[in-house]
Amino acid sequence: MKHLTVIAAIIAYSGTTLAQVPGGVIPPTAAGGFGVATDHELATKAAEAMLQRGGNAVDAAVAASFTLSVVRPFACGIGGGGFMVIYLPGTAGVVQTAVNYRETCPAAIKPDTFSEPGLPARASEFGGLAVATPGTVKGLLYVLEKYGTLPRDVVFAPAIAAAEDGFVADAAYIRSKTELLEQFSPASGGREKFGFVWTTLLGKGELASGDRIRNLGHGKALRLIASEGADVFYGGEIAAAIVSSVQRTGGRLSREDLALYKVSETPPLLGSAFGRTVLTMPPPSSGGVALLQILGMMERSSIKPQELKSSDPAYLFSLVEAMKFAFADRAFYMADPAFVPVPTERLLSAAYIDSRMKIMPKGRTEGIGYYTINENGEQLVPDGGTSHISVVDSRGGAVACTETINLAFGSLVEAEGFGFILNNQMDDFTTSAAPNAFGLTQSKRNAPEGGKRPLSSMTPTVVLKSGSVEMVSGGAGGPRIISGTVQTVLNRLIFDMRAGECVASPRVHHQWKPSELQVEDRLMKRYNGLPVSQWLEKFGHRVKRTSAVAGVNVVVVSQDTVEAAADDRRGGVATPHLRRNQEAQPPKELK
Ligand code: GLY
Image (cartoon, rainbow, N blue to C red; front, side):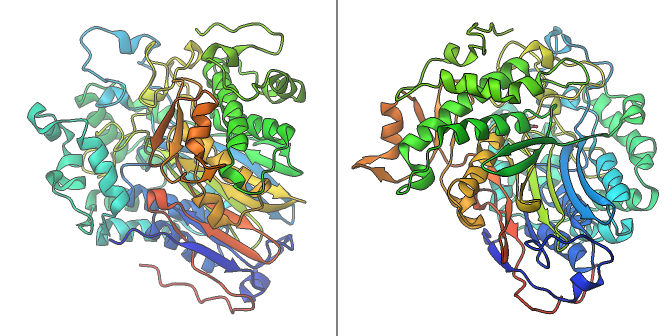
């Protein structure tokens, strides 16, 4: 299938849909337009269909998420988990909330489990032991019931149709297939061990762009969940299949782990920067804290280059220094606050951000140890999948939702007979002294422990201006999510870019360790005759070129328009236009 890049400018309208909505407090800037950006055309269409029926941003995000479970089986889905930041204005006040349906560690997995002798290589990445208790189904049904407006059968319909009628493998799908197969040579005989992933989702390695994939097992799972609710997944037929598939492949997830799984809901992390209010995800995501720290440092550095905008070398130098401080804190302090203390308030305090600015390097980057000097001048001692949905509805509501099964095709373990892939989120825990699959070094605070959630980088974010939604952002790509998301937000808040430009502009990533600066291939600009990447080397960075720093999907609301932009780096698709004064479209026929 043609690799789709759609940057949709949706002109705000004052059509009949708005008038029919009972009782919403409608912020003027958002009134009458909606926007959706996801990683796949069918998911964006699913969300759009909900909004056209009068559903809200939560209905739309849930429909998109179940559809992504089918069409992006390598990135996210009902075998995984996620986070959702919700902002919904209404008659009874504004809902601002953060819903945490991240996977949890099975009770039988202990801090030292992955050091036991005799485990297969890369046990935290492949096979049953890599699987953490999935949260997506409970999370999505929880938000649908509490904050959604549409019935389950309507919301599930597009996902069921995608599974049963099939969908077409696109370039992003084929890239993930290649990423996986490159790790297993045919000679190793390892590929057949992928089972369902190999036979069906990869067409025995022959799957090509444009091929259609039908997944009747996944359709069956979705039909069961739509009719019986979350119980069938956490205690019924699907639970039985999950547990037997995991245990057969060396894992320890039990029926009890599934039965005990709980969604957690907390206030979002609230910050302010550049005159805006930012709602983002608290720990166990590191994303929200890192994003707010970086925004705070960039606000204080008050650089606003004109010529090269976000590709200006001096701007990039400051941004990367901010990233290095934030990622060092991520490595030291972050984990699941339900299990270990995480000093979120301190790390986001003005005094702490000021202390970073006092030692902010000038003109030349520093070695790794420099970024772990705390505010008292003391040196601290150290002890790839994913998919993002951004939605703004016509009532001014917004959802930022990031979900994952972790690495490409997760643990490779199918919940047998049900066509969905179980996550390998155990690798996001600190399972050994070595860096994880993303090259991240993390502390012992993030060691596996029954019921604990692994540290995440997912950064679903909503930005408000004068009390109305200005931007929804978030992305996929492991730790690069933080860098990608913060750069799209800065592109809006500093450079006033439109949605398409926010997403398309070249990005960089530095995660403190390893000491290398990833620079996207698309950063081709020159400054004073030298390529920008050479300026970065002059500042002391080891530059590594990369094709993509995250895949970020955004919606930007301005006075007259709502613009959605999905990232071409992951084959994303945004909603098509609604024009000013255009009559609302009749609801689309759902299959
Ligand atoms: N599994 C990627 C993340 O949550 O950061």
